[in-house]
Image (cartoon, rainbow, N blue to C red; front, side, top):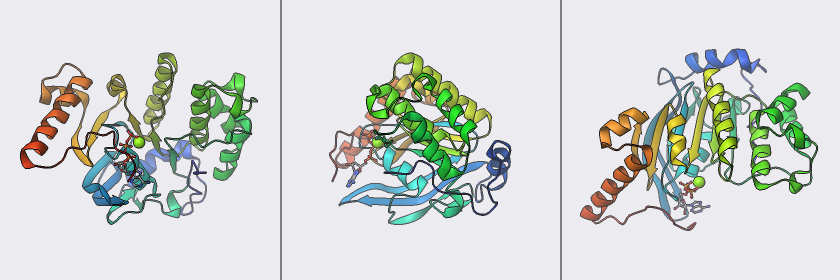
Length: 286
Ligand SMILES: Nc1ncnc2c1ncn2[C@@H]1O[C@H](COP(=O)(O)OP(=O)(O)OP(=O)(O)O)[C@@H](O)[C@H]1O
Ligand SMILES: [Mg+2]
């Protein structure tokens, strides 16, 4: 099972994260002022496929950044590299001034995997408490995380008996429980109804107001309007890294979906003109 929160903060003990977030975000983002995550010439090969050929990217601290793009474009792979669980061929990923995956980041980075990884035979509370113990937080934090995802009424239910949406919210509670400074959330709202999606986005916005950095992948284009910045990834390449207003101005589209389709269409046309095979998704694992 993938751990949701990667270990314990070693350099500075176990800080009160709620008060340390802003300091961490503003002082330890070495290499790029205000950047929580810096990706420098990252190259990832999975199997025989070059998934990320040469990625350069900075993710500002204290913002909600949406990671969007066609299936198979490399979103999960980039997220895995940011949390330090992806073998990389070359390049670097720096998170809060530390190399991705380093022990110093283990408590400070929360990761929600695309596939739920809570224990089906434990209750919601037992799952969240387990991850809470891993990061050294108490019962209050467990209750808060469960309330944040609106599962208080089901806290004592076995995860295996929950609906799909409740299951994914239980998964998210495990990621939130340690109040990490950087949250990497791989499709956290997939399969949820509009009300729950809205509530979760309000949580993400609140986390950003507290100074946390939230990187969220999604296929739901209306969620783009809730992000401070948008990254559009296609075929391992960043087609766009901007705010939504800038993206709309650049493409002349009236909404995020239209803008993304325009950029993806332009990229596909460029690929066709240069003889590169397109990679607009629906790819199987190599
Ligand atoms: N374990 C693996 N071994 C080999 N190739 C893989 C593996 N996992 C993913 N890939 C390939 O890496 C590429 C990027 O996959 P990735 O999961 O990062 O895409 P994604 O943008 O997250 O897609 P989705 O929106 O469907 O979740 C795809 O071509 C995929 O087939
Ligand atoms: Mg994915």
